[in-house]
Amino acid sequence: MTQLETYLHMETIAIFDKYAKTADNTQTLTKAELKSVLEKELPNFLQMGKNKDATDEIFRNLDENGDSQVDFKEFVIFVAALTCCCHKYFEQKAAK
Ligand SMILES: [Ca+2]
Image 1 (cartoon, rainbow, N blue to C red):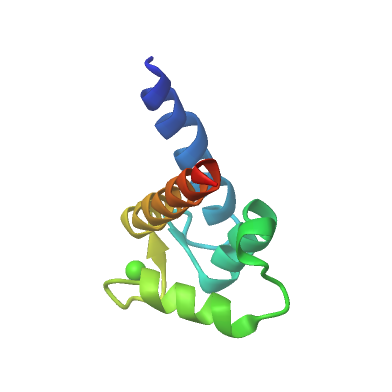
Image 2 (tube, rainbow, N blue to C red):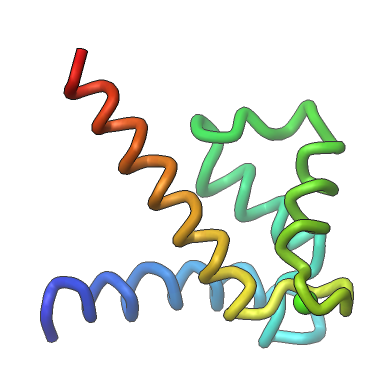
């Protein structure tokens, strides 16, 4: 596998599956599961835990089809958006 294929398979899918399997539907993330992803995988980036509204807002934004679940496609959009933010952050940091 190439580096990008390895990243996609081993990281994005593995993280989604790890959290999606804790509730009944193992193909989607509930709001509680998304909250766990944010708290455990992105504690520094989002400063979660104290701000319930942030989780609610992120969940609403990600749940594109409005079924109260975040499926893998919706999750991947989130990961892509985060990747863009990180890229921009590190670019700005390097420019200083
Ligand atoms: Ca959804």
